[in-house]
Length: 377
Image (cartoon, rainbow, N blue to C red; front, side, top):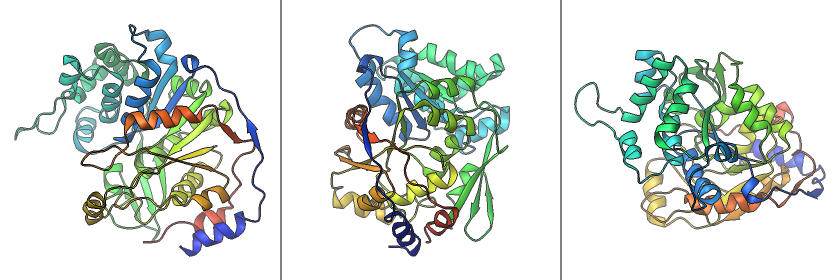
């Protein structure tokens, strides 16, 4: 255990564990869920929640569905197809949005297959997905990225809605523990040095108004899984969004990643993830930390370890000491990769919606404690 983590335990164990209170929830068919993030993690959450909340055997009900399941997506990506389109056409990165639209669409439809098609030739089209190109074209035609998302949703018959955290041209930069800086989301994980903080440029972008409204009206907010510094925290750095979640009174669940991520969270435990979020968004209420309880097959652990990704240690006692409620569930998908099962995950998330939760916020961590708890590689 690192010295910084021990210091956090020593300070926090001296404080009283918060009292518990019963918080009711609306019926499942009225529950409003907001999920935050990006990358490959958010679509997994959306796929499971769509089936659990909206797959009622009837026709899609756009007006009702739109309020019941909302994705709020980071827009800081500057790598791959999204980065190339962003640089060439001045649009916001479409890739994370496309993945979320597909998660909320009928996966078996021809339109979804077209949207998901990726060119693999050797020319300038190589690496682009057709969905990214369509969203780019719609964005330029409408001169409005949010309108492009709406039109893409109509094309795919999406159930639920996908909203950008902001429609401003934001970039991500990171301060490392040695005092150096890295510019650009795609570069942050490429340098094997400890990340101290990440920042948006501009630092205080204007939030997308509909995203703020969705957060204010949420009954349940889900953060993660996903890249801690490049998918999850950037959404929370949009100050008005984080404030809206706090003011909503919603139950907030953090889905813990299954493994560490090379270049971002090397050596991190579950508690380290929480402390990083609190360094960036100290007023963000997180009531539950959802953790996988199923052992990962040794063959997969060895394969991932060779690529510097190891299972995240749950740190259950320290999570409790910090004022969070650790919840262990079977979340693992049984296949050739280490990843969450979308339907197990949705069942676990919705099962938390009506449970007991802390009546007070998690205990405060002083700036000195926050800084001391930064993991060192």
